[in-house]
Image (tube, rainbow, N blue to C red; front, side, top):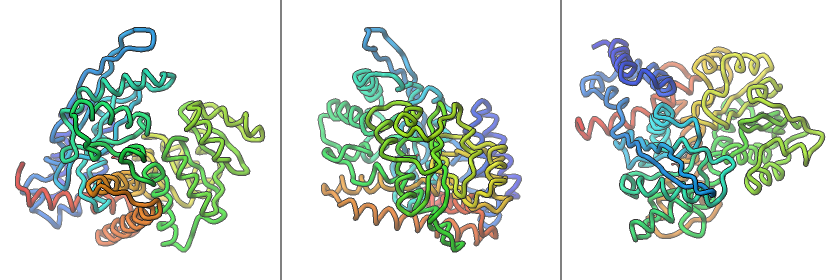
Length: 448
Ligand code: GLU
């Protein structure tokens, strides 16, 4: 069968089955479009139904998460875990706690994770999970009870050789600690490798916290270097102010850039002299407050309500590190008009497909999420290695490995793009390079 017809047929089936899941369809469409030239060369993938198997999760778990708030009131949330693909390793991917979480969000994230994890070069399959729970304004004890209830169901589906969750939006070191404590209690065994992003004193890895943000900068640095450019003296916008954003800002500053803005879901701060990261860390990591607090520390900075305004600030490099679809076509056009030279995606799918087209058509260097933000999950895999060996590496050791992995990802992605005739299209390159490893494993493992 003709590759384009095959892809159309598979996509139509995906729409039929998941018509009410727009984010999932968006992620699938982008990948399938990239695969047509690969399928033209490799009819064996069509014959073995690789693509129709790839778009259907191996398993999707949906469960009730009841918990009791500090006033004794009962609440019920919905928990999810999608175990998308285990061809190259156990399912691996974070947990997101956010009120917008639903099946579409979890499936788009799980689907992306398959290719991202493959690109790391490490043996990890694709999975993702979470709940429509809103951690905002909850006490520590409420968070703990929620995590315990969530794990009291999830434990039967995960394990170091089966499925290894980690953090994502709304799930950081505190939540992983509570989840791990509950898992350990239920199983009565110390299985450190069941979760990653753990605290350093109970099996966590140095550099894991910094890894997604640092990795993003290592990737973008390599992408700039290919065009004889670097971060020095550049004006950078980083959206978000969570774990990814904070450590992207830290590394970009270290490389000589001026980061002038960051944000949260309520609004953004613009500090033209450069964001003072110590205050952002204090507000977000210690006080767990809103980014609007920043102007209390830095009265010369501006705070603006609403998120999309951040992309109207003039910059050389834009690093969306907040959430999906935060850059739409209009924001992308404004960034281009303002002279942006590079965009690196720290969040998952932060640019709409129209925005991606604007960047590619304008020859903006564009590092797609599944390549550019793979440093987090790559370092999770390094955490699993350390857990298996029962030893821990130094910060430098892990950081060096992370840097090598990010550079390798860039090389693989750009050579896959070149091989398929689109040298600077790293979207295509990432989808193809990520796909090939998984597809070959699926061929070798038979139709399962
Ligand atoms: N949530 C992160 C991601 O999107 C990290 C996942 C992990 O470490 O397993 O890749």
